[in-house]
Image 1 (cartoon, one colour):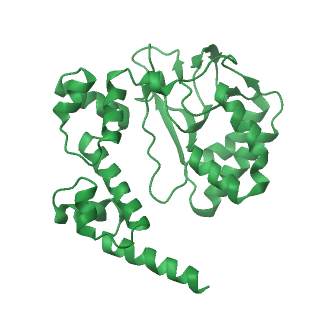
Image 2: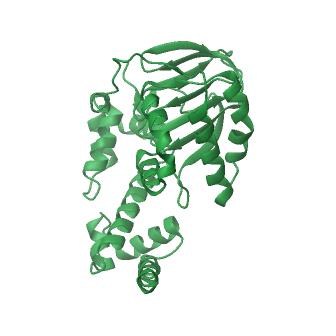
Length: 294
């Protein structure tokens, strides 16, 4: 069975995602994503799958998975039993950690850890116990403390003894191959045609599903409706243009990213970014001018 693509949403103003979930939960399925993931089980035991590895887990199971490595944890629980907190998770992109390592040469020691994560890495019970209070705190932390905890967690994993690789050396994740699954085809179509008009019916046909079935499946995969998902991607693209092309008018950007109504674009931009696009551009210009004057 091919894994599903999980769309990891890292919130505005944050560098990575730190969260927790219970069981059952919509992300508990055979899935992959481009982000690194630190996954710590808090409660329940069962069977877990990482690449071509299959093993038994219990509370304290701590695993680091690399980009696009399929994984899943399935708890042994009766169908009518729910657990409010099963695990804590940190997810961060290759771009974020790569750029951070370029800015801070001292982080070059993470290279081996990140490379080993491409097979999945299981850490010892002692390492998991050491990280448990940090993983608990980071879920609710903010500001500088959040970054401090993130670095402490990575440092602990980097120094950890007794870590074991999980999937075999010959196992190579193939995200392009996973795209044969209907929903992943639809998500790829959205990314490739983001600025063009398309409908939910078009995507349902690509996914090989009815429109109602596609709508339910899309929300299960992404945690949001198609309209919300496309709006967020288009607003993010608009931000990129605002930051890279100071001569492009806001009206031109509106139509360039796929909106067909300027007032709606301004309203949606404000809802997503907390300010209208004109103020976003003005603050960006002020920041650039301040840097030049320094």
